[in-house]
Amino acid sequence: MSAQPKPTNRSRPGALLLPAMVVAAATLTGCESGNGGAGNSAPNTGLSNLGGTAPASDLRLLSTIDPNQPLTDSVKQELAAQAALDLQSVLDGLDPSAPPSRPNASQTPAERAPTRSQPSTKLAPSAGLGALEPSNTTSALADAPALPETPREAPLPAPAPKALEAADSAWSSAAPTQTDPLLELATNMAGLLKNPSPDGSPRVADAVALAAIEAMHPGSVAELESASSGLGQRLAPDDRAALLAARQRILSKPDQANAQLVAALSKLTPSPGVKISRSALCTRVQGFGRYDAVANSTFVAGKPIRLIVYTELDQFASRPAREGDPAQANVPLGEQKSVELSQTLTLYHDGSGLQAWHRPAQRVVETTQRSRRDFYLIHQIELPATLTVGRYSLKVVVTDQTTGAVDEVNLPITITGDASALPK
Picture: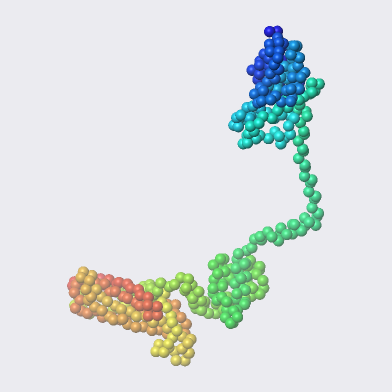
């Protein structure tokens, strides 16, 4: 076997893919040809024969080889490169899971796309280096079609000044403006006061309208006409005048303003009913909140006990006056209000819980031209001298006959047989 020069990578890119074992196989083939080992058979051009008939590129390469002459370096490189490409084609055809072969520079980008999902069972002849002309010493990659450049978008034309002004105006009108909640509330309430309902009745009561404003900013309505009032200076003149007129009506009838507030909240927060705010055993009562309470609730047995039961009430109801009520004769009945209550007194012995004394319900009706804001009851009683020594509780029960609400309270009483136990 004659020594062959070592192949070199001069210009053909196929030599970069050449495995060492394929180079050795190509060299051995060249040695056999040079020695005339199998003169009647065509030299093996690589692994392309595994797929059947050798491709046309291989046949063209074989026609230039003299079987009686040793192979040149360039021919060996072409045969080795073709063998490497043919081997890769066999692997791509037999193993679908194998990675795609290195793209051929002579293929188009669409032809280079991997097709692993649908592998082909027919081996297409490789163009390889055998398709290159012997005189072509440049890289085949230079013949690859250039990728199209991505077109650049043309710059947008600058908007005209008028278009910018229109856009700024539209943005300004669409942007939310910050408002003063107090001014907005006062304006709305003034509008309700100025514009009555179709039937002529006010849309909102004076006290309710002004109370809403005062609740947000106390003192704003009281200082409405002042030069230092921020609300008064910002309100429209007619709105300011409507609020001032409502305030004047409230000042002229303060009790009516209170009734308006109670009526407005009655359905939202129903009254829990009549309440006994204060109750006492007294020796003298001169009026609401004016009474002399007993210094000690201890009394000597064997003597009658004379007392006044004083009771203050809250949250009682008023109803329209009707026939039979103690109304004023010179005032129309429809302009009067009545409060109707009843009170029951019962004395219980604390030790046994037995009833020791009882006063049946006493009905009380008071009629006035305006609804009352305070109410009190006084009942003169006399406890019997037969009460035995011990502790007692006087239960006071008040019933609002208009609503049916009931409240009660217990007043302690002590009966002693020793007069020295009484305070001096």
